[in-house]
Length: 536
Image (cartoon, rainbow, N blue to C red; front, side, top):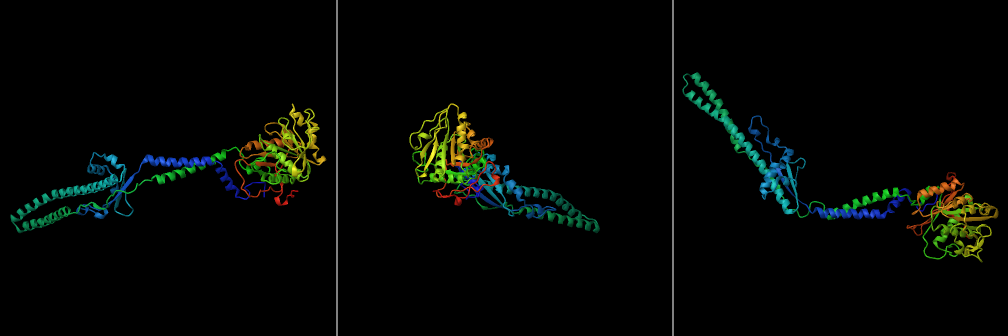
């Protein structure tokens, strides 16, 4: 297992992305509500539309069989052409005339849709209107107008063809009458036989033309049959409120998720233990839950139980297992920016180290706002430090309850903080810790606000960074690491404070792994929990 991460037991990639998205729940909820509201508004503004349907079987009619060189009627029909005719302005004009009331043909055409199911001779007329009755009336008007238009076209074609045949027939009848007179007055038998032959041919031609005229006059001109009349629909045809609102909500949810994803990409904060670890290139030693009541800054010792006290003890044991703290030495506890948990983290970490039987010295290296002497249970009177000689002679003993005792060097207001933190007396506290067999836990002002922490980081064996991922910028953590390494320091790891998120109750604390060569100057591992020394 690599460095500590509360989600180490979960599929990191997908779960981390989901956590990033759902941190912006307000955006997702806003998109969902906005989409639902837009769907309802569209439904209210658009009103309800009703669609009535009529169907016609188109009958093939042609005068071609009665014309020279004609083709059969069943090959004369084109459903694509018929569909265009049904949607034509001529049919719309007939429908407008049938409906009456000065209906505009162009306006009527907007609600009409004509389709032809594949491999059929059926035309489907669909008309959409604002009321069921209007939709039914208009679709039936278009059906009748189409049939009337088609029948009128056929009748007109038949009449024109009959007229043409009659024009061709009249001179033939006159020629036959002339031949009859010629036969009657023939002077020779040969002349009479020739005239009779011509008359026979002419009579056959006349009979053929008369037969075609008779056939055209008896032709069935029915344009088709109505197989389905348009009836008033019972329900709207378009999507109603019950459809538009859910569809709008889904679209809004998708937009909200997209906005949350973009927001998570642009979020400069280190929102997870993984991002803190990546920025510092060091493990996370633990995540401290929010404090629930209680008084006093010291929690390890006065409090035997409690989730926070146990977490402090676990962090201390992990720190002790780090190679750089295998021997006594200095440890700096600091934050990137101002954080109220920095001082409690240093105090309780020192108490937890003392609880393991180590000699611990807690140094408040804050020459601006010292306050530990008044908040910790010290034994006896606290000697007021002399600003010019701090930290010499400023030691006092803190009674940490069941954790035992630890030494405290309280802070002191000095006019020149840099000189005090670089004085031989202060540097000797950290540099001589190994010789004295002490673990020195120092706490300073925020590293990016003052140079105090930079001066101490070079003297300590390791630096422990305190932060809240919900409020700490990744850029600040990068700068912390650069500052520490620039003065020869080493970032051991980080201690996280929970913001608005709580770790699942009962979930085991993930434990960093053993240090590896790849950790470099900024990475440090610790052992698994089952190999940690037991707390006395």
